[in-house]
Image (cartoon, rainbow, N blue to C red; front, side):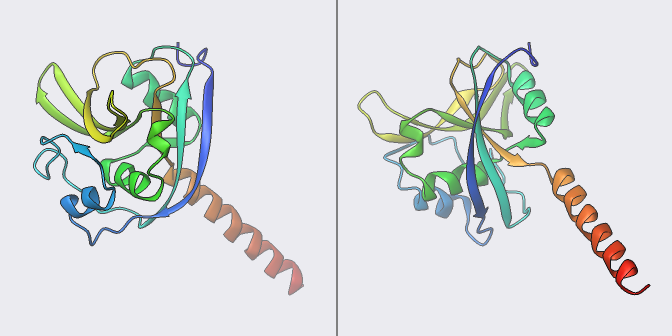
Length: 175
């Protein structure tokens, strides 16, 4: 199922994540009209990471599980985004969530052994922008968006390749 699903990828610009902001400040920066009260630091801790990341949104033409989505992202050299990435997207591109619901699968609130929740950007029935929780252990609908971060392994590999090329050029020049 992972390989047969057709994906749509929407590349975004590189983002700077401001880790000096608290979770409530990150939420406030997005100016959401509705925010789920369970999106708290206790349930969704912020993990300090790379301050600059390359983000993209993937969507698929069929229903998929969270595990299948994560595997498909991995095949494309992307990782699932965390809540801080999702909030940076919502603050920078507030209208993006009106085109499709977008979830961050790497920040998971485990309510019980059988109930997992992730943060999502969406709109309410009356078209208000919202930051809400979605069930992560059920199938995602066709066309749902998943925020993804370019894999750090891919970035490191690119850096190593660039460094090798520089060393070879430097060696060649000095001959």
